[in-house]
Structure formats: structure tokens, C-alpha cells
Length: 197
Image 1 (tube, rainbow, N blue to C red):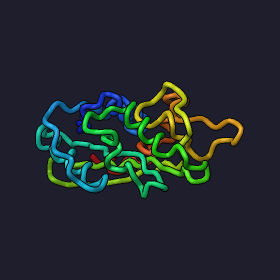
Image 2 (cartoon, one colour):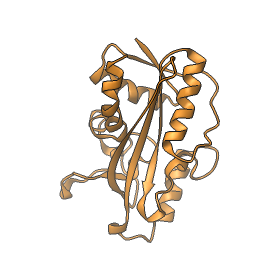
Image 3 (tube, rainbow, N blue to C red):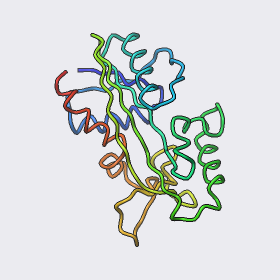
Image 4 (tube, rainbow, N blue to C red):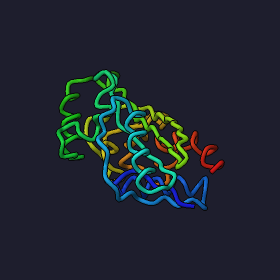
């Protein structure tokens, strides 16, 4: 069975396929090649639904869409839904990361709390809609570390690691990230819905 992932980001397609394989080996995640809707929602859920509805309508397939980002406590939850555009409309991941680090350069470690949020919308061709959310808590490093992952991964230190061996997600293996990430947590809530397809 095929489900379309409403993104043109190949990293997300690959990541979703790895997550899906663990729960539904028979489910193939395919990339979306249709027009991108304007993401004018003010919440992750609104934007995820906009994208999933567009992909379902364009392809006639069940559609998944993820809207995700990093939320920094001291910034009132920003960048949040603006994570991909934090440094401007070019969606420059390196510039986004650099700007966020610059904004927090004087912030002491106890106040660098942050979390990744992933909201996944599932829209079925018959019009049924479901939304789930995953949260991955942690804090922000002072400098980037690791070449793995993408986006803000090289500066995010997830909770739950030994204090003497903390790493950023950029230093995680792909398997480690898939087992713990905000998308994996959201997808775990989605599995019962996919099982019913």
C-alpha cells in the first residue's frame, strides 16, 4: 500500500520511510510532486492539515504531512512554526541555525531549554482527518556538533543522556534518532490509525 508524504524534502521522505518500516513494512511512503500550498497556519496542526489535504486531493492517495520545528523556552516557543524560515524566506538551514545560536549567545545553560515538536496529519481520500503530536525535550548546545541529521539537529541535546556523554542529535546515528525523535513519537500515536487503513 502507498501513502504520499506531503513534502518535497527528501530527508523527511527517507526519515518517514525508516519510521514506517518498523511499524508497517507493507506501507510505502512516496514523495509528493504536486504544488505546495501556502502554509499560512499559525500552529503546527493547521500547517500539517493544509499540506496533507493538498496532497490527498492532488494524488487521490492517503496523505501524511508533518509540520515540525524547534521551540525554545526563552524565546516564548519560537522559532516554532517559523523554524524553516527563521533567517528568511530562503529556507537556509545553516543560516537558521547560526541565527538561533547568535540570539542565545548570552543565555546561560539552565535557560537553554527547548523541544522539537512534530505534528503529523493523516488525510484519507474519503475526507477523514487525524492529527497526532510528538514532543522531544532537551536543550540547546552552545556550538554545533555532528554531521548527522539536518536542520537544528547539530545544536539539540535531547534529555535522558548520561551527563558525561551528552551528544547533539547531529552526533546520533540514524537508528538512534529514529528511535527517539519527535517524529517517531508522533508516528507511534499514528500507528493504530495506519493499521486500520
